Length: 288
Ligand SMILES: Nc1ncnc2c1ncn2[C@@H]1O[C@H](COP(=O)(O)OP(=O)(O)OP(=O)(O)O)[C@@H](O)[C@H]1O
Image (cartoon, rainbow, N blue to C red):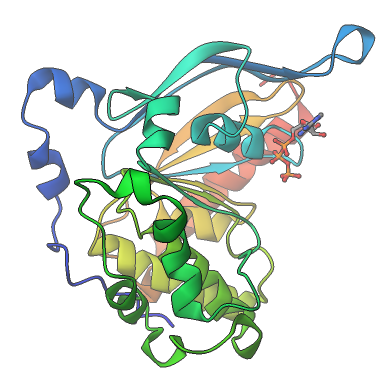
């Protein structure tokens, strides 16, 4: 529920994450660095290039959304960063580590489109599961208590329930909470609210915003919703298709912390117009 996803185990801050990176070299590597990523599927006549030369630097603690036409490679880009599929060229680093090492060290939290909870396990057991099956990754880590995380996400009452006893929005919140168990450096979210109706979706979006504002993580968030991208993000990456590439990056200079009142501001409407017209240009001309 909006306003309930507060994480009070972390400092509410603007620059604290930045302060943790003290060495100049660390600072230069912090966050997600994507250099010249190429990705194709198929071979020979059936080969198609899905991502063409993607360059992007996401600062530590920055919230970046990716928006673009269906099939432009948004999910593929997320999968490359998550280490779920290999790129054909280029490289990605996460806080200076290769994707392989970041994935091994559970530095990457992934929230898929559907919550993918095990129906025969309680909410608490679903959130505990990654810790149980990845015991080796736990050594020396600052793991978060699943109970505390669930309370932070407003799911205290749901801890002993089974997924089928929760609404779709609550199930998705459990999936987001689960991604926080290892206190990842980066959170990759692939349209996490796309299956929800608009009211529920807005509620979950504002809840995520609230949570993120008190617990800044580096986030890459894929969405089809322009208002969602504006409300949540520091920057919006607009992609074009065939092949997938970055057409434009739009800064969202709305003050933080933000809340639902932002929707009604002139600045929000101006940004909405800018993102929509960029998307229209991308759809009309695949070579923007
Ligand atoms: N495993 C795969 N094998 C072959 N082609 C694939 C595979 N995964 C994705 N594709 C193709 O790659 C292109 C990009 O897919 P991707 O899912 O990354 O796009 P998307 O921008 O996330 O789309 P949407 O907005 O519809 O979810 C599409 O043409 C898709 O058909």
